[in-house]
Length: 255
Image 1 (cartoon, rainbow, N blue to C red):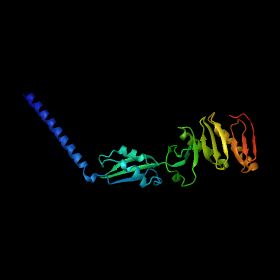
Image 2: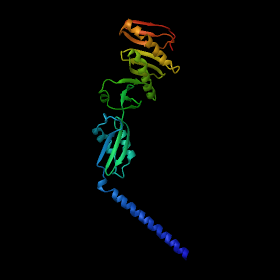
Image 3: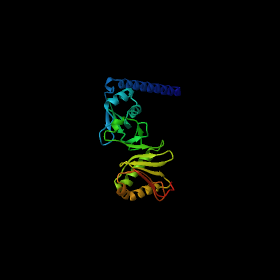
Image 4: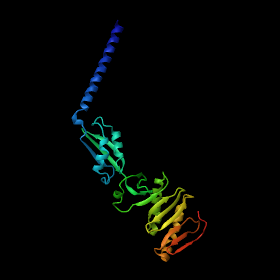
């Protein structure tokens, strides 16, 4: 008998607990649906020190905001993040709630470095390929040009940084960097000269070839001024040169 009473009490307590939990859940749901928790604003901040430059309110209103569903409690923050990451110029977004009816979205923008390939896409300083308004990207001047096999974007950007440093002694800078399907490098410098560097046979192949060109470049300029059109450095101990009205080469064992 006492056993039955204890079982009855335990069952009663369990039912009361379930009832209390159900009432609590209902109360929470009721509170969460109150108008005061309807999202009133979405504040956008920059993840960088500088203010956002390319992401504008009108694009956010038409692209991201229509995808946001729910109120302060029910909105899916991951879905909000994804909605913002499809906005042009957004590299990454992070979202948090601000009591009682606001969302704060922190945005990292793409920083354009140049164009990628021939299809109008852009390449960022971090080696990300993205699509955005080309005219906006060129507000500070003409963009650099890059191209390479799919998946080589970060390698091309890293090599561009190297080339900047390697050509600095003769005050030249790469304006275009291309990696071919055979993984051969060619560049165009800011004086209009094209340089064929070929494939990387060792870790120092490209630097050695650039160093040879940098070493002879002052003599070439002294003789040819601005007539140099292209230089082919794919020779073990020499080069081939094309200038206006002139072409010659040294060491014909091209690599």
